[in-house]
Image (cartoon, rainbow, N blue to C red; front, side):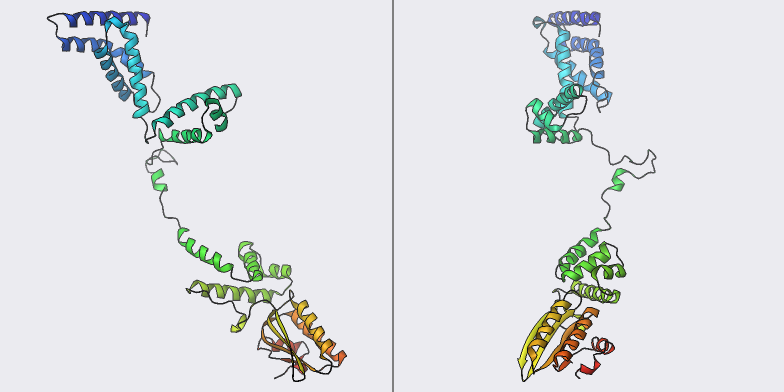
Length: 370
């Protein structure tokens, strides 16, 4: 806007005031004519706010409304009309951006804090040659860091992305952002099952949990699991099958079943030993699963029983044994050897259908009781 234009508007304002004050004047006509003369001023001020997310036509309407207010409130005795009109129109445009241009309602204190924070961030970016952190901006303007962070987040409410826009391309046939949101999560149906399984896994013995983790989370083969745990691949297969069967049954029942040994024997996986002496016999009752992890405990117990049996007969009761691996068989062979040296009669009783064939193949058939 040139100096000449400013002078012309000020002169026109004085002429307008004189005409309105005339006894035979038509105030409405004079007001409309003077307002039309000032429309270029409103257009130029509206153009300064172009590119801020609002259509220029809407900004011109707001600027013209401010111009009308300036014309109605103008008092020639208080100075330049142009200065008063520029202040009034600019204030109306800023008020429009503050109150009406936000797509999402944001409280006024946050909007004012955002303006201050953005101004401080611009200055600090030039000073530091980098974008300042939220804490640095908060320290500059003397506001709490949390409120400054909320203000920057609220900045997204001024011009949010449209759900009708396509993030892929400008093609009208491409899926829009709205098409990509709110779809059914295919994994949602499995959340309940995952939570149930995670709780049931904690009911399993540590060894079975470790095997399941290695197999299904570590993607390890049964051979690799067997090599790491020091057992046979067949043993790993049996334990995994038993654990999975128990999990399936627990998933389908309201009350999880009690963990039991194989073949329905109600025995836990841990080794249980009980020594009894009665009627001229020392009976070692073995329960659970005998593998490499607990074979040494059984070996020490049987060696002690052989040493204390003296003239009594030694009976090893395997009726509660769910599983006997190679380490367990070796322990029984060692016991038979120690009993033979100590001349203690030895008998193995209660061997189940899965244990008896293994003992026979190991050379212990002679001491197996019917």
